[in-house]
Length: 421
Image (cartoon, rainbow, N blue to C red):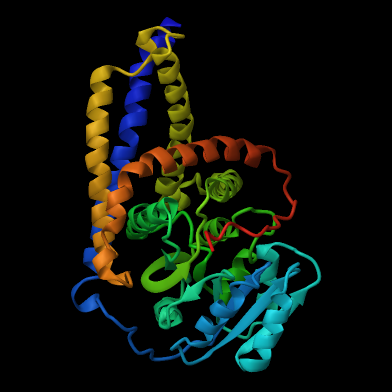
């Protein structure tokens, strides 16, 4: 017990200052990427002309998307890119998705529809679409995603003179902002996801592409064996498979895609639990393949993920000890040092505001209403309380689930929470 009490101050310090360190890394990395790739002559409002237009197939796996499929497909049909086809895969939907897709196929010449008799999961739906696709590049989006008219052009332009480029991930933007959870996720996708992708791309390896908007080179997918159908997050899995085979992955901030996100705690929990379980599956499956000198460029991603998982468990433990100490169940010495607690609270608040302000400023030109760019800052104080606790709990539950999940069990999907209607 004395040994544990001696370790506690270090544990509290780790829980308090690891997020601050990563905030600093993400802010510096995000600004570095912005200054190198998104300013001056490199900054364009429209994609540059292509010397050669690669043939593109847009794959849209759909499961119970009768409310969203038409808007999504019409946005795909309005792309400025010249040479592409649209393939919608109805993955055994139980609603009117099949009727909606067939009606649109009769109206839109670029659109082809594939119907699966039973729900097979997103990975299988994508593989089915790839089998009938004619493109050299596959742009994969979700059934509720709305592509910016120049999205495909921005994604494809990176493949031109980069033969080892395997994938380009786009820049998803939240479009349902009618609730506190919606507004917090607007900030999260910029302050956390956007900055992380910029930082990791600057470093040279990324944890995952955004499954909601990503372009793949067909030859790269063929080389790695396509998508894995037993992983809960097929986007994380295929990202690691590509990088294991020395394919590079890029981030294109101009490739905008507008998406719907959960606006209930139940829907958000189910989403984050799936993310946590799928990320753990990928780490456990592929991490050993990078533990050699040739895989050293992934060590940063591996280390950050492993430490972050440990941080989640440490956060839950220290939170429980603090509550028990405040309730008098444990001696006061088991709680956090008062000086550390007061300093941490002040520094965390300032750091959180700085990170969100920087990220929203970097992404300001991608917002449809620039006057409202900094609006999420009004709610940023709730971000650590809501999302840190939620992410820690999801990781604490999801990692053991990944350990005991049987390999080969197909990952099928259910209709997610798409926000208030």
